[in-house]
Length: 464
Image 1 (tube, one colour):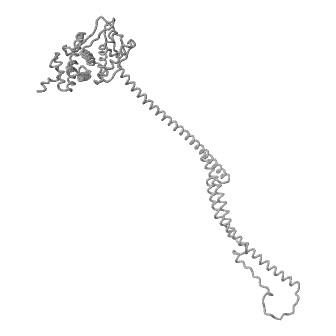
Image 2 (image 1 turned 90 degrees about the vertical axis):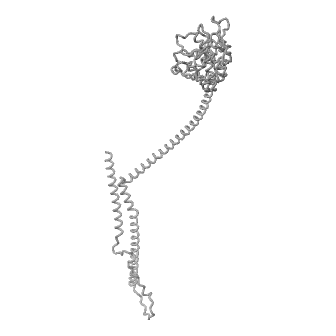
Image 3 (image 1 turned 90 degrees about the horizontal axis):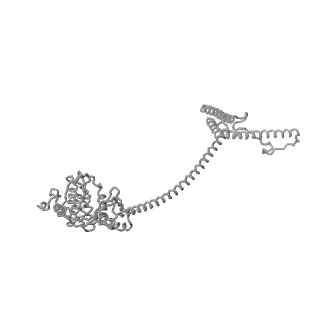
C-alpha cells in the first residue's frame, strides 16, 4: 500500500517536472522565433539602408567667374521654403540613421538571447525535467531536500561526535585495562615468587620431616626422647647408606604397651610400643625400628604368604642390622628399675652355631621356641657371612637380597622364602667376586643346609 502511494506521488511530481520542462522549451522556441523576425520596411542589415547623400549647395560649387547679373532681393517666402526644405531633408536623414542603429542593437540583443537560451535555458530545462522525474517540481521540494540533507548531516555529525566519545571512552577503558594488566602481571610475579618461596619452604619442611626419625607420644619423658632421637636418627642414616629411601612417616614411640610384652612394632598404626622398664634399652628400640625400616623398604610392604617362615627371617634381620650398626654381636634388653616384669631380661648373641632349617612353617608349628630358634640361626649365619665379607659388603648384599624378594609366595624358590632369600643373597654376594658366593655356601653348609638347597655351585666345581 505504501509502495503504491509512493509511486503515485512520484508520478505526480514527474508530470509536474515534465510540464515545467516543456514550458521552458516553449520559451526557448519563442526566443528563437523572435530573433528571426525583421521590422517591416527595414533591411535585414542596418548597413544596407540607403541614406541619400545630401547634395552640396550649389553656392559651394566652384565655377568659373562669370558675369554677375544684377542682384535681386529674394522674396521672404522663397527663403522660408528653402529653409524648410533643407530642415525636412536633414530630419529625414537623421531618422533613417537612428532606425539603422536600433536595428543593429536589436540584432545584437537577439544574438545574446540565443546564447542565453543555449547555455542556460536548455540545461535548465534538462535539470527541471530530471528533477521532475525524481518528484521535485517546485522550490518547496528543493527546500525540503535541503532540510532533509541538513538533518542527515546533523545526524551524521551527532553520530560522529558520539563515535568520538565512544572512542575516547574506549581508549580510557583500554588504558585502565592496560594499567590493570600491568598490576595483575606484577601481582602474578609476586605470587609466583611467593609460590617458589613456599615450595622451597615445603621442600625444606619435607626434608625436615624426613629427618625426623621418630615421633613421641605424650607419655614418653623428654629425657628419654632426647636419648632415643640421636640413636634412631643415626640408625636410619646407616640404612640410607645401604640404599634405603624414606617411604613412610616416622613411627610414633609410646610406652603404653599391653601387659606381658617387652616391645613390638605395630605396622597398622606405625607405632613402636616399649615397656617403660625397657625404654632405655638401645636394643629394644633399635630392633622395633628395624622392623619399620624392613617393611617400608620393600615395594610390596609386608608379606602376604600363608606360611609364617618369613616371620623368623624378618626377626633374624631385625637382630642382625642393629648388631652390625653397633658392631657387636651380643644384644641385650635389660629392664631398669623396680618396674621390671617377672620374665626378666632378653639377650641374644649372634656369634652362634645354631642350625638353620629351611622350609615352610605352618600355623600349628607356630610357637615361640621354633620362631626364636630360626631367628637366632638367621642372625648367626648372617653374622658369620659379615665376618668373612666385611661389614660394608655384607650389609649391602643382605639388604638388597631382602628388598628383591617377591611378595607372592608362589614365586618363591621351591615355595620357600628362606630358600629364595639365600638364592638372592648368593647373587648379591657374587658381585664381590667368585669367593663371595662360596662364602655364603660355606656358612649355610656348616649350619646344616642341604647341598640341594645351597645356591649356585661349589667354587671347586666352577674351577673344573
